[in-house]
Length: 320
Image (cartoon, rainbow, N blue to C red; front, side):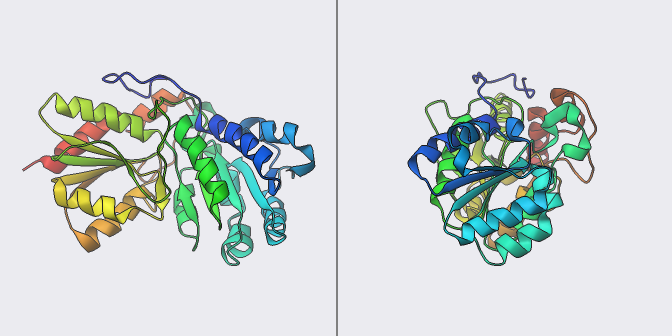
């Protein structure tokens, strides 16, 4: 899968859900407090490796996400570190009230992992495409919300999630993705990773849009435009200092994400810009619509989630 990337050479790596599953199984051998709960989709969420190695600490709750959250919160209250996984839309949308009252309100140490996020899941269609999950997760007080860009960063994010106390949402994808962090991810929760420096425009992205942002930066460089690229993997808490520096040091900001225009990374960045240093902005996202069923590359192109869309947005920001 190319994701429309043509100007840079990035090795194809695993899906972020696979990297999460591998990291989870490794962590299970180090910490007996970790328990895993799944909504009968362990072959898709990739919790299966943990369940096979540690069956006594694994629970298949079935297609009952509200019960999954209730059990996870009870285990957290007893001192365990529960990792509750399902498709992101099933987890966040189906069980939001239980997450709100049983995890967020008591501020319990529950780790939610939503796989198959965004429209890049392809043929499964809009009923299974989580496009509002970041808005839902970030609205919950006390939650940490992370969207990794590739396999190495997903692995690092999983380990950080298990070491951090408090409620957490990790968003993972279905398709294989380019490896952005070829030498391993230097990952710090709440701190953006600057992948490229530039002084004309800044592109802030997360998830699959990070590799596209790097590709777009190459395209902009061909036209003499210097582009800073930030991987804003942590949507909450946001790296406000990195956003403020971008607003101060470049002429504008483009935010790219595989999410609706409402309540996602773009909204979070906009609040910082409006309060600290107003500047010109543009947004690459799904807009205010659901997608359809189709091949991932075709859907991303149809709904404007491509490097060329980022290039066009940057040009709008820089237009005199």
